Image (cartoon, rainbow, N blue to C red):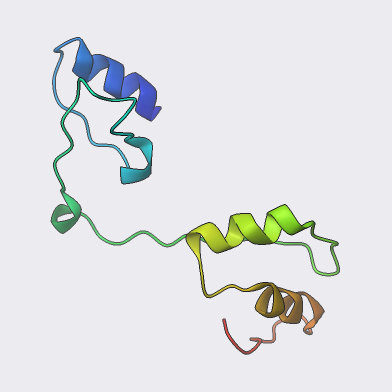
Length: 91
């Protein structure tokens, strides 16, 4: 279920909702209260798939670094140039 739908149900008083922290915006969701529940859930793993040999624009590198700061442009370019199945340095 979409986080906005869950938040709408909560705002209507239908119950409580569990959403990702990135889906909660203090400025926009002023009628809601966020309670940290990270201790109840396992850590999530996010993966990025990029076709080998692809040309990536600058904003793609920036986007990747927003959730994985260690994936610098140099690390990503090394991975894209590596042989299939190889684990490039920095990953």
